[in-house]
Image (cartoon, rainbow, N blue to C red; front, top):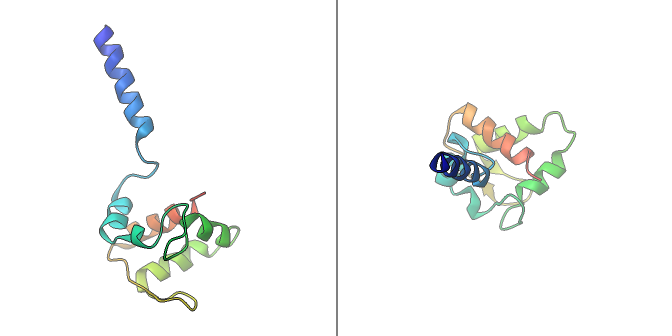
Length: 103
């Protein structure tokens, strides 16, 4: 009984410690090295995802705009070229959702 409770507690703690996002989108974020220029909260070479989310808050077309930028690459404003994300549309949409849900 004590072992069962201890295991349950350990699994619960592990679940709470897991990242908020897990799945194919996160794998692509790692593979494409998105964190080289972006993080969830800190501005690096590129803006933080949270600042992007604030910029597009209330914009109904935000997810489509981010999807297009990730899918096609190219200039971001006056900044350097953003590389294309090599993934399926569903994964790129999930990445856009992660960016827009950042706080």
